Length: 151
Image (cartoon, rainbow, N blue to C red):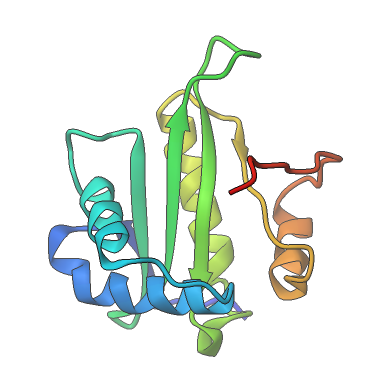
């Protein structure tokens, strides 16, 4: 059931502790850790007005931080418009199914539209069934398979 006490707003420098708790939980879900310098650089980029291509939003329920999303605007060789990559999305397990994830994605859609970059895409792990249930309702599954350079 959707929450009526939900607020979505841009990350602010004073959100560091709340963001760090959500970000760390997100990384733990994917069974990974990142060094402190990556946390520092990521938060700095997400809150730096000089880096407008990288953005972050925070979801608050009743004033308590319960979710986050990070997104990146970039050029696209298949269009004259920029596009938007929704890189990270996390909702605290206690609020899943209450509209937090949907609200964060819709806020990215709105930000992309406002920036003239209406093409928004993202990826998730195949095993992430809970998130994929939402994504199947709010997005379109594509046939692409991701590869990356070996370490």
